Image 1 (cartoon, rainbow, N blue to C red):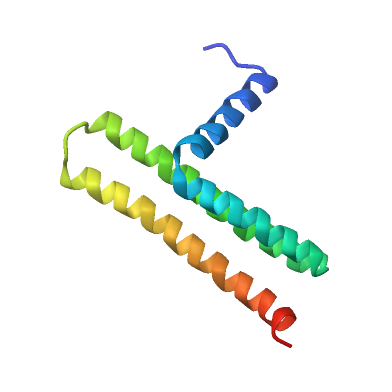
Image 2 (spheres, rainbow, N blue to C red):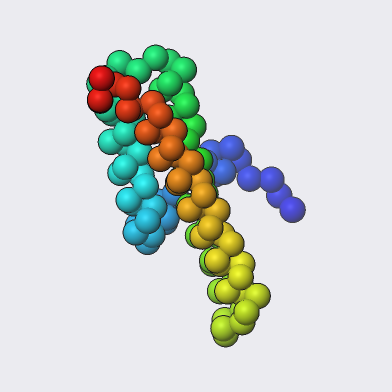
Length: 118
């Protein structure tokens, strides 16, 4: 197998990100929410540590959403018909997004609450 160039690897990764943004409603919601949260963190002059915590949690949600999409596509390919195991795989992947998003909301609440409700 021929190794692909670093530039080609970045192109494939960008294609995956753009695919998720173009086709997955929840990815667009999480992406937009993340941009808004990071903007307000910058505007409210969060410390570098607080900003990095928010950046990591936003990134974790986006990564979970992309992995969920990948699992859904692979399951659809492997099991075109409905199957209980296919449903379980999709449900677990969706649950991973939910848990990550809830943790992100908790971190956001902990960091924003003192600044917004002094």
